[in-house]
Length: 386
Image (cartoon, rainbow, N blue to C red; front, side, top):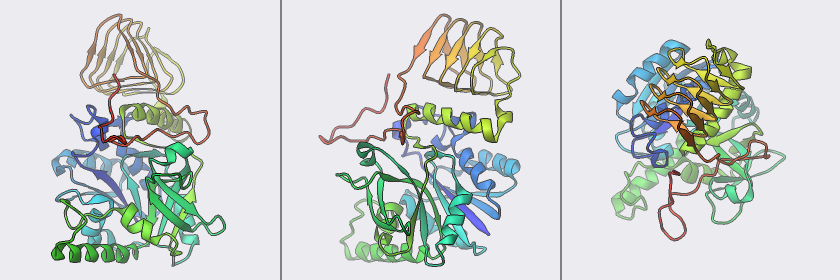
C-alpha cells in the first residue's frame, strides 16, 4: 500500500504569482484547463496500490473543501486536506501529521511540491526506490539545469554507479552540480526517525533559548536543508535523474510555459481533452471548456487554454495564452503570450502581447528561471512584468 503527500503551502506564499493568486489559492490556479494540483493528483491516482492522497498546507479548509470533494468523485481515491496551524516548512507539517501518514502502514509514500509541473514518473520512481533495498530512506527526482540556473535550486552530487546522493546543497552561492532537485520524492516510513531527531534537537534549542529558528514555530523543519542534506553521503538517500520536462511554477510566465507542456501531454495521455466542439479554427494543442462560447471566425492556438464561461468574439486571434473563466474578448482582438484574468473584458481591436518567457523548449535542459525574491543588494526583485 502506498500514499502520497502534496505540499501546497499557504496564502502567505506565492507572492511572485500575484495578482493571479489573489482571488484563488495558487494550487487551484488552472493550467491546461485543470487546477494546478489536479495534475499531481491525477499522476498519483494512476499509481497502482496508492490508496490515499494527503494535501498538506495552511490555507483555510473552506478554500479547498469543494475541490477535494470533486477530486474524490473524479478519481475514486481517498483524498484529505490536513491544515497546519501555521507555516511549518516542507517537512515540519509532515512530522506534525506523521501519524496520519503512517496509519495503515504504507510501504512508502510520495512527496510532491505543489508548485512544480512535470510528467511525474511516479511508477518509475517506486520501482527505482524499491531496487535500492531496505536501506533507502528517500529517493529524489532530479533533472539537469545550466550552471547559472542551478544556483537557484537544490544541487545534487551523486555517485553515478550506485545513484547515491553524496552531497546536497540548497541554492548554493557557487556552482556545485548541474543536477537539481525536482521537488518530487519517494520515502520509506523510517524517514520520520530522521525528522524526529531534527525536531527533538530544535525543541531542545528552543527551550534552552538558543534557537536558530528565529521567529518561526519550533516545529518548523525544512526537508531539503535539515533532512536531505544530512542524509547525503549516508548511503540512505538516492537520486533518479529524468530527462523529461520539468519546471517550477513561480510566476505568470511559468504558468504559460507549463500550460504548453501539459497540453502536449494531453495529446498522448488524454487526447479527449483536446477534442473541441467548435467551428473556430484550431491550430495545435488547445483546451476549450465546454461552457466557453467561441465565435466560428476566431483562430485559437497553438498552446491555448480557454476557461469556463469565457467568450471569444468574431475574428479574435489567441496564441500561447491562458484565458480564465468568464473573460470576454471582443471582436478582432489579438492575445499573445498572456493570461487574461477572471471576468476581464477586452474591447474590440485590442492587442494584448506579453513577453515570451525563456526557456526555449528546443534548448536541452531548458528550465524556467527562478530568481530569488531579493537580489545581492538586498533589494526586492521585480516579480511582475507589464
